[in-house]
Structure formats: structure tokens, C-alpha cells
Length: 283
Image (cartoon, rainbow, N blue to C red; front, side, top):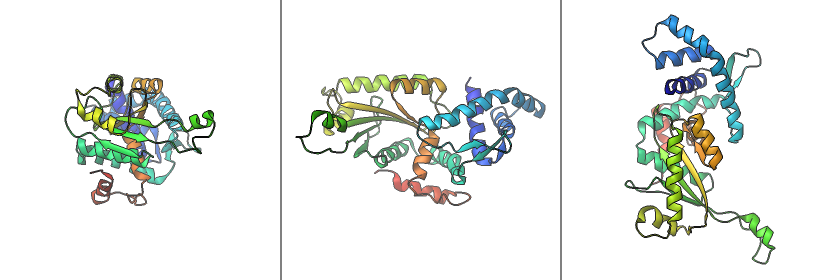
């Protein structure tokens, strides 16, 4: 099952790198990468056999971007239904950025980068927990709703503003290891314990940070899981059911691209270009 996920994700990134390209070419490249000892005849056989399933997987992935309110980097050509094209040429850099996050950042740097992304997304406060026992929570952030009028306005209108939301985030810098449903369960469980025991003094690292931002046992919470890799379908399903925001490596890369820190208009990003994203890492 893991090999199938690896082939699908590699084929997806290969399509982004090489588009416009036919799907079968991406699948063959992914199989060669995953099974380097296979003969070419076996590669072709496996690619043809898995083509229908991979096409459905690609279609589902493209559709999932709409649910995340993002634009899929790939779409099917209107001329050749088996050919993939880029929606925006700048999105060709996504695999390169994701690879840089994995190979050039430490786990702590990736964590602080994610804190910056939360802040850029509208959080008024975002702080990463220093390395050490963190009880499954890497970042504590808050989101303040806009004020509406004065305290004299009607209660329903005041409720529309909503309470302060406390954001708890987990960050995992993985290469080819996908994030499975068990890791999402662990994060939900760990965050639930932390939320229920805010007032306890037994552990100051996370709880003290929560008390500092004004969190209380009945505060509104949002859980976010960042990774440089991808999520399995069961992990995505659980995240959707439990209201956990899942941001994969591609999502992190797109979040960095919209900051305009990187020269994405270039045909190819060099390491010196990619190093610019370090300016986003919170100290």
C-alpha cells in the first residue's frame, strides 16, 4: 500500500515538473523510481495496468483543491485527454521548494517557518515551542476575530464576531514518508489532553504558553497539521471528519510562493534563490 502511495505522489510531482506531459510517462517514471531493479518491459506492464487507477487518483486530487479553496497546479488538456498541463507555469517550482524544505531545513527551522505561515494567514500571535517534550503540540497561535461595533450592539451581532480562536499545530518534516491516519489520531488525542488540562501546573511548556495567550478550558480551538510530505487518504478523511486542517508539502510550498519572497517568475530556482525563504523563519 505504501509503495502505491509513493508511486502516485511521485507521478504527481513528476507531472508538475514536466507538464505538458502524458500521464503514462509520469507513471512510468514513478515506477522506475520506486522499483529501480525492474526491467523496462515490467515497468511498461505495471504502468498500463495501473493507469486507470492513477487517472482516477489524479482526478480526485484535482477536485480536493477546490475543497481546500486552492487552485490545483494541474489540469487535463482540452486537446489530449491523456495529457496534463500546468494551470500556472510558476507552480512548476512546487516540487523544488518541497525538496528544499526536506533537505535544507532542520525540524526546528521547519517548525518556525510554519509559525510564520500561520501569522501570514492572519494569526495575531504565533509561537513555536522550543525543542524538548511538547506533548504533541509544536505551535501555539491565536486568531482574533474583527470587532463589530460596541458592547451595546445586540447579542446575535456580537456572536457573529466569534470568540478568540486558539490554534494548536503539529509540524513534521518528512521526506518520502507519508503521514498516516494514526499520526492524526495521536495529534488529536494529544491536543485534547492539553486543552482539557490548561489550568494544571504540571507542565509549563505548552500550558504556560496557552495561558499567556488567554486560552481557557472552553476556548475555541483549531488544530492544524503541517508536513513536508503528503497525507494518506484515511488521514485526509479523519482530518475532514474532525475538523483538522491538513497542510501537506505542496500546501506549504504554495503558502511560501504567495509571499513573493522567491523569484517564481524564473524558469528554474537555484539554491541561492531558495535560501531567500529563510527570511520567513521566525527567530
